[in-house]
Image (cartoon, each protein chain N blue to C red):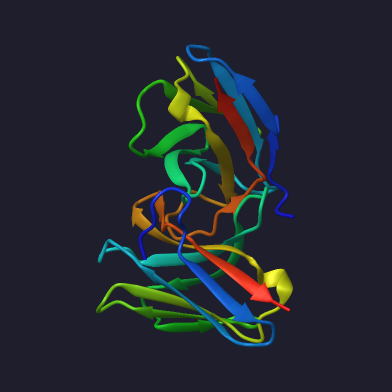
Length: 114
Length: 111
C-alpha cells in the first residue's frame, strides 16, 4: 500500500453534471498528480499540483480543474461531464515536485457517465 | 508495441521462466523512466526506475535496461511467479511533470 487514498471508489453521473474527486497524498509528500485511465489504456496526465499551485498540465480542456489544500490533499473537478469522461481517475503523490521523482498511486475512482 | 482499446500486447510465460517486457518511448529528451505494475482494480504500483545516465538497473528479481539510441526500455523479471500476472506500463517524464505512459503489456503466468 502506498498511503495514497482516494474517494469515492465508484461514482455514477449523468451527462452534463459536475463531479468532484478527492485524494489524500502520502505522508511527507507535497505534490499530487492526476491521471485519467480509459479502459484498456495507460494513464494520461491531467495536471499536477505542487504546494497548492498548478505545476504542469496535460492536454485536457479547462472543464477539468483542480485544487490542492494546505495539507496537500487535492481535488479534481470535472464540469459538464461527457460520456467519454467515463474512466478510472488516479491520483499520485510524490515528495517534492521534481520531474525525476517516483509517483505513488492511489487505488483510483471509477467514474461512469451515463 | 502499440495497442488500441482493449487489445493490449500480451505475454504468456510458464511459472519459473524469465519474462521480458519491452517498451518504446517517444521523447529523446526524457531523462527518467519508471516501470509500473497494475493489477485488476488497483492503481499502478512502482516496480523500478532508471535515469538516463544509466543503461541498466537491478532490483529484487527485476532488471530494467535502457537503450537511448533506439529509445527502448525493457523490464526483465526473473523466475516469474503467478503473483506477477498483471498489466505492466513503462512511463517517461515526457515534458517536465507530464509522466507519459505506454499502452501496457498484459503478463499472464501459467502454473
